Length: 128
Image 1 (cartoon, one colour):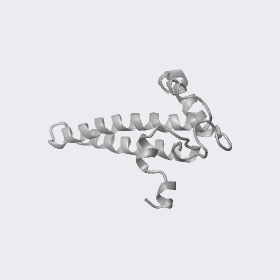
Image 2 (cartoon, helix red, strand yellow):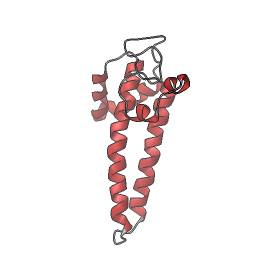
Image 3 (cartoon, helix red, strand yellow):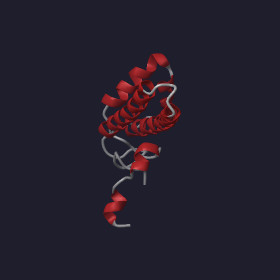
Image 4 (spheres, one colour):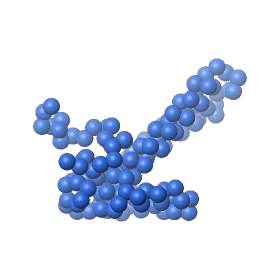
């Protein structure tokens, strides 16, 4: 692996890794990506007739997308909390209906820690 490849984080880390830090823009783009995937799958489920053979396929695609997006969104938010130098258990705020929209808003606008913190040297990279 070259030095450039070692410096560039992989998409698997971005969407499914939990270590390291993530700044506001990649966090927002990750959430937007999953919102588009879920919207596309849900649209197909709604537009295909329940009698059509592809309905089951699209329903399974929607369920798979829902599971993957939930796990990925949690991992994105954990890394975002790390960038703000906050502990990962605060992710539970996303599961409280009254707090979830406020917590997501805070994740999107609150700036990260300048310089290194206990979760990594720089944002948008796994902890080394």
